Image (cartoon, rainbow, N blue to C red; front, side, top):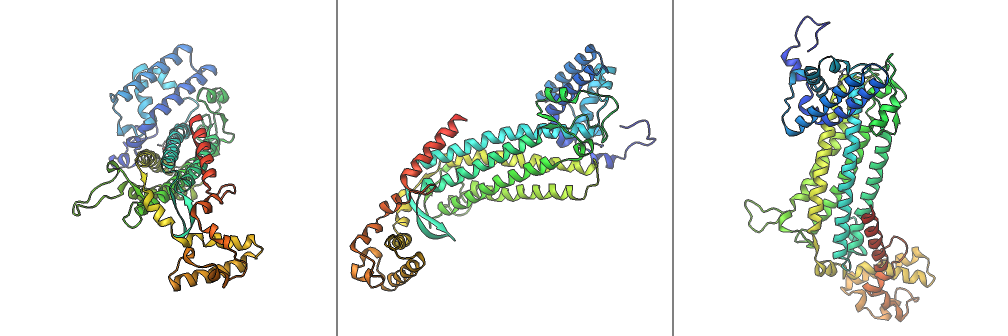
Length: 456
Ligand code: ARG
């Protein structure tokens, strides 16, 4: 490919080893957008004529249309997406095409392409994240009045609403969306014009080119700009975080779909059978998502490791940023889509969640709070109730079946009204501090999310 300095052809093996077009062809639309903007910069700088610029632009648009139709043949010998498009353009329009690469290097070109790619991917992921939140809110609304135990250490703790549990994930995804937006803002500056590493002696109006591409500004240090992939690592982190959140939800759903819990039913369309055991209905979507989150984390680790030993400035190692990035974006996008569908088909089994929530032990904290409300310091109340629990287990007697005298044998503070705090409904209604799962709070949270998610 390179004439000039080289007397020998590149070895076929080196060509195969170094090519990136087999995967970076996906950047074609961004590469072409970048080239068109650059050609306008060249025109403004007086390097090319208006006629040449228009031939470049229409040539590139034709190539783009052909790629979209699948009618363009990328060649490995031309190494990457940049060379493939530029070579084809020059073949078609001659010397105007050969002027396009003035004051530009593939180093600032790829850095620009990858930023544009990340930016549009973020926009797409934001939409998918929102759809996932909406599906969770709808599922929560369908099961709104279902009471269930809330767990710590996977041991029954206190009563909550099923909806409250699902809304926890809506909160997580909201933070993820904010991270995506933040990452987008930081990456939306244009490296083009940084050249190979030291800019160019041919002065292009970078701000003008940036405007054409919808960038908020331009990078301020050419050496940093060609070698910076912080934004890739940052995006891979946010994607991993979403993956971790989906993985946690997966784990909940896998437990809930088991016969032991049977808190939810997944639709037939989102489960699979076993090749051997005819009774099985497996939550494969959740399991796969839990598994795929490992890949997302792996890609983040690969990216950080790729960057850590790089001397300034551009090094070919950076070509290795693309496959993990593409893989994470593809994997997460599909995971969000399929998860949204699965959650839309998921229903809570009230009888099962309510049977589990009927465990009187869930109200032990409420009895402790009763003592606190009657002036007993919490630490003492905790100990009294601990003993009461031990008694209940030893005597195989629920709190509800104990007499007032039995209560009073643990603390004389107990009055007959202690029985009132043994009611699940009142216990739940009493949890009305901000963020707690009283039905009234949950209803207003659901309304808030409905509002937020439909407005956006
Ligand atoms: N394929 C290269 C990459 O992804 C493009 C930049 C190549 N630059 C170079 N000096 N070889 O990083």
